[in-house]
Amino acid sequence: MNKYQYDVIVIGGGPAGLAAALSASENGAEKVAIIERDFRLGGILQQCIHTGFGLKYFGEELAGPQYAHKFIEQLNDRNIDVFLNTMVLKLDADQHIVTGASREYGVCEFQAKAIVLAMGCRERTRASISVPGSRPAGVYTAGTAQRLINIQNYMVGRKVVILGSGDIGMIMARRMTLEGAKVEAVIEIMSYLAGLTRNKVQCLDDFNIPLYLDHTIVEILGKNRVEGIRMAKVDEKKRPIPGTEKRVECDTLLLSVGLIPENEVSKGGNIELNRITGGPIVDHRMQTKKAGVFACGNVVHVNDLVDNVSTESKLAGKYAADYANGKWENGRKVEVEPGENVRYVAPQEFVCQKTADEGSKVSFYFRVTQPKKKVEIQALDGERVISRKKRPFVNPGEIENLTLTYKELEGCSSDHISIICKSVEEASL
Amino acid sequence: MIEKDIICVICPSSCHIHVKGDGKNVTEITGFTCNRGKEYATTEYIAPKRTLTTTMRAKGYVSPVIPVRTDKPVPKESLMKCMDILNNMEVEAPFDSGRVVVENILDSGANVILAII
Image 1 (cartoon, chains in turn red, purple):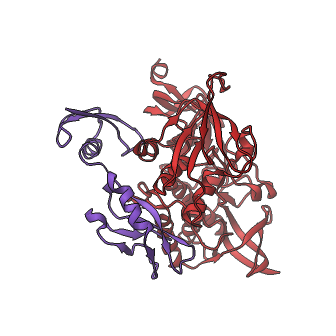
Image 2: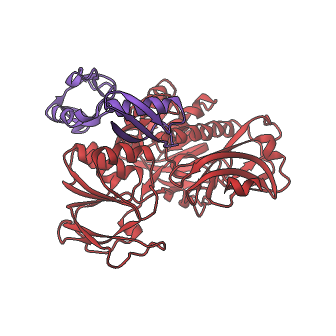
Image 3: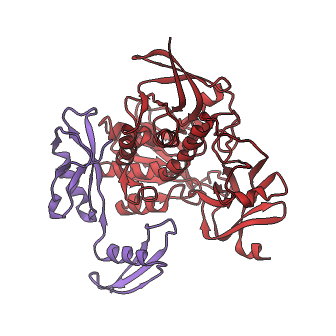
């Protein structure tokens, strides 16, 4: 068996892994390696050929592969090893050993001082949402269709219905239209859009593709190939309303019904996961519950912008380098929990450190449960408001954040902070 | 008088901007909350433009098709015509990110470039 030793090993060569590896190297880790199962780096950005990436991080609007290219160029200037076509099979999170396999290197074992998990996420499938009906060919997840069309040059269908108004679904509605398909409908069970508004405007409205909110698919029709679907309006409990069914002819159904962090490797390493995000519980340094094992990007929680993934992953890389170099300090832990109208918060913990500059800041990212207008976001230490900010509106499809200083966090009397989002009228009482 | 409701996509605030005019000139604009939004809505009213991203057939590349984009937005109504042109061409090496493969497509002033890793 081939054995390797590194300061920092990064699992996954997508946007999270690229930023983490680069940042680990920039922050003093001498030997850094990325393990990637695909034949090249870039992860999901390879197939995201649309623009809209990098506005925050690079200040310009890039296509997905261009965004990845910028990181890979910087990577090439540094001494970072890349193991391509290498699948990670096992993680020993206590001994810091990663076992992988590839044609070129055989079964290999990587011993690392610190490990960064950057495996990204997966799409939810038909099985995860239990759509009734027959099981014909022609039902794809939106991301699979995206890969087939944009990389493998295989057009998946001509008459398309899309279930779910997530970003990938809307982007595929435009992509399929440009390639000559007719998109009959985008169907969303919730009363609001799951993805970003700009995608509705530029992907659906531009091409007159109808969006049906408060609707779902009650049956998939067809024996060998999809022949159509039956859709229905849903009531407030999301149950189909009898008498509202409508048949739509189509040969293809794309599912854009959510993403789940990909944590098979983490589970094998007994890394504790959060029930809501499905990703590892991390502290503000992106360290999981296992010492020296870090996590970043969509493996922790599903982001809507790659720019945020890069920012968060740079932190993970920096702290992994610090850990590898013995610059590490543990202290009192403050847990950060979701409160009123907040579904989850990441990172979930803050660790007080004596050596840290108290002016440093931590951004906590969260999603709201319900869309609301005119809200105030507050961080609470018991009854006391530590920090607050107003927002004109919030929406579950768009990630929010609240930034606190180390001083504010260390000054907490309890070991639990909650983040809440209430309407301004209530907040001012 | 031609009126248009435009949802601004410059930032996630998604302001609903209402524009009035004769189709070529704006006479009244309401609902914007910043100057970038005002500019966006004005362009969107007079001559909406979009960046086109698609793939082209590629000879000798690692996959049968290669991602391309326009380096500037092109008139919205010309998107399908651009697609016709690009779907009937084949790209050859060198495959360098940013290389121009079609100059000034449909006289739009925009070049089509390779947008690759």
